[in-house]
Every structure is written in structure tokens, then in C-alpha cells.
Image 1 (tube, rainbow, N blue to C red):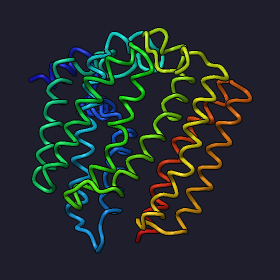
Image 2: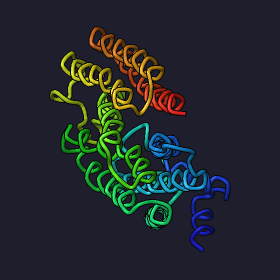
Image 3: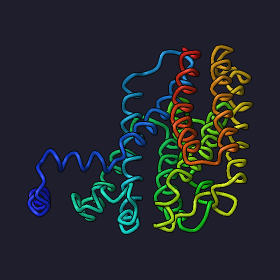
Length: 298
């Protein structure tokens, strides 16, 4: 059996082998994708929603994300070996073989897409499949081409709320594009803050994600600030379109201002420490905003 052979070859226990597969899915990222899909579904509902559909949508979103990030790691094995932050991942260390990862990614994608086909509208399946293709086969190779990769990667990164919305309604409305837009713009300060912090590692692998010539300077910090600034008016649009109310608009505005302050501090300092704060700020901003929208909606 593949499992027993792999465990014997690498001298790892069954528990460590399972843990390696969990790590392969990038659980924090995949859970964020799943949560964003559930967020879009709940936000689109005009009455009480179907818990079974919500749970299956969340599972389907997680599996599709797991497939996409696994393909990403398969393509980038030799690059992951070069970087400190990635060289201990399951594929570079050999805890999971490349063939096993391929089978896992195919199985996850098929199961995830089948779940969505059963519970949701075909447009939901199409958007999910598009997201997987863009992330795995377009964004991934573009990381070594230039910062255009961030724009491309922002599309699948922003699709989960739209996927959830279509699962609930079967259509793409203006309101759905609003929540897509918020998550799309958020991707830029999020990606660039990470790229700033991981710049030395990224250069080892030839990844080119920072804008403005790829330098950690005022110009790049200014770009980050501009996109962060856009989040302020965008965060008010759900209230404008009647998706949510004034309470969440206040919370989102406060979050947007605090996030903007971090970007201004990055412009002032242009340091790794300020970029790290910006990165953690981006991790906090999106779930807090989405939870605020949900609470206000409910």
C-alpha cells in the first residue's frame, strides 16, 4: 500500500502522516476560504437558511481550496526547498510523495465540486472551478513573472463570498459584486504585506510580488496605503445597498481607519516590523468585517 510504503520510507508514524496531509491543505487558508463562502451564503439569505446546505457548502469550499493549494505546492516543490518558511512542508521533506499529492488534489477537487453541484446552482460550481484553475495554474506560475500575479491571485481570493451568494440565490447580483469587491481590494495590502515580510525568502525562489519595481520602500508602502484607503468607501456599500445596516457600517469604518493607520505607519517606517503589523492587521480585518456584516444582517 502507498500509505504503509510512505511511512516506512520516511520513518513517520500514521499520526504524523495524517498530520502531513492536514498541513498540505494549508488549513488556515482553506478555513478562511470556507468561512468566506459560508459568509456569502448567509448574507444572501432573505429568511432562515438551510443548515445542511451551509455545512456542505463550507465542506465543498474547503476541499476545493485544499486541492488548489496542494497543486500550488506540487508545482513549487523545488522553490519551497529554497525558502526557510517552506522547506519543512510535507512535499519538500518527502513526508508525502508528489504522486500522493496529485491523487489527493484530484480527489479533493472532484469531491468538492460534486458537493457543490448537488447542493447549489451550476454557476456556483463554475465559479469554484474557475477559482481553482486561476489560483493553481495561473497565479502560481505568475509569481515568478511579476506583481501581475497579485492581481490574478486576488480574483480567486475574492471569489468565495460570491460563490456563497450564488449558492443561496443562483445569480450574481450587484450586492454580490460589492462583497466580492471588498475582498478583492483587501487582497492587495494583504499580499504585499506578506511579500514585504517574506521578501528575502521570496527572492531565493525568484518570486516577484512587490509592486513598484519590487522594492521595500516608500513607493511600495504608498501603493499599499492607496488600496487600504479604498476599503473605507467600499466597506460602506453593503449598508448603501441595504444588505446590512448602520451598525456594521460603523464597525467596518473603524476597522478600515485602523487598517489605514497601519499603512501610514508603514509609509513612515518602511520597516519589516511595520510590514509585519500590516500583515497581522490584514488577517484581523477581513474576518472582523465579515462577522460584523453577518451580525448586522441577522
